[in-house]
Length: 178
Image (cartoon, rainbow, N blue to C red; front, side):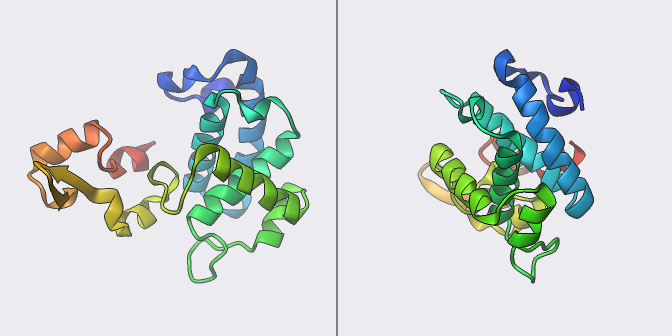
């Protein structure tokens, strides 16, 4: 895997040079696991989370086993997207995920808890939520216009376009194209 595979957009080059090799190694692991057991959207979300961790000051990625970081990243993205719920496709049990990554399940869960704490992540984290889940989350679409909350999808097209450009509502078309 090359840097251009992990950093496809110019703004992702804000990852410090010293951490690019770490990020590339972690992304190679998450991409492989996602390719074999999940899907491309999970792989992209895992790369997004890995880049966020690399940008954190100081970055926690400077220390530790890349395999454990990769497991924590996949577990975090999976838990945000209900990966461990049998009714949600794709589905994968946590013990199987740990087995696929080659780490102990409790270590993976602990690393995920650390990631959530470091970045202040919560359920339905818009940047880390699958498009299908995001479409169903009414909070991702709420915008306030002149003090009145609206579902951004009901606003005129030109306002929706500006809200997407400003990152106020998700741009699902861009995410699906990526």
